Length: 455
Image (cartoon, rainbow, N blue to C red; front, side):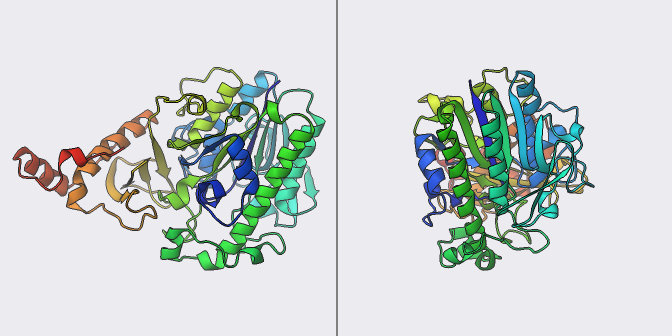
């Protein structure tokens, strides 16, 4: 018997894990079980905003393909989902917490047709609008309101633990979707459990936040406190699996929808291609993941659904955009395209490619709220991550980096086409044309070709 649990947080940066370099002791459980399993240290979201990222996690397709390219667009009930497929293969399916893929006019209850095929249900469409940190309100399979005691993280995770205990006799797939460490919208704050914010008033601050400020000094202590409690709840879930002799037969996948840039890159917390908004934690342990390995290749949330299907030895539909991560876990030198496509909506029509060395981003024409894509994109961002890990120095207008832009533009176009995007162009700038002329005349000596390593 094989089980899978997805433990999904909201707005959690990849560098909040100790295993990824954070010295604040926020995640001892994730670090410990990641060391026993797999830590994907370079995991990225394909869409740094809540609803679209969640659609990717249910369908294995980019949000532009399913139509959920921004918030307030429900997932089409006819869409293929991971829960429908697992349920059809005699695996129990259950969902707990925040959904954000139902009718946008309903903050709490979600009709059955809009639940993505999950059999058991205890969730709210927009958990941030129907609950507070110590007032958890979810809706069950009959759309009856259920109030749960305790801090919201504990309330949701404890409900999932009870489900595991009561349904352990058959294979199960459980999706636990927390709101934390997302801000409480109507307060614009990060309400940690009582006493937890105080622990992190003088904690380590990532380089980008040190340099750019934003709301960091007001919000980071509470944010860290929320993550500490998430890690404790995660540890409690693993303890429950261990006590029931289920840990070695249950794959536990921990990740997040996007990161948090604390109003440094724009006037909110996400919706940019920078690592602060797109780099996320991805820790897999238990079951088939007990391998003890750190994977440093670039991976994406769009790879999670194919991985789950692979774990359960089910066919992966050809129209999914990701690939199973299992070869990265087991093979010494797997074939892997070490680049991730990022799509931006709502604040801009943006596309970006993240490689090991470069982040290259473009913005398009059109209305970012109503248009999922553009016909013409223009280069906007270019960062050399080996020289500038905090992404503070944009090289997009540097003549010296025109060859890199040319190569990355081709790579980005290739990834966009693979994501079923069509009828677009990334414009060739005057500088590009100048470069091509200089190159053809052999009068472009200051950037030798052998230095161009765009991957």
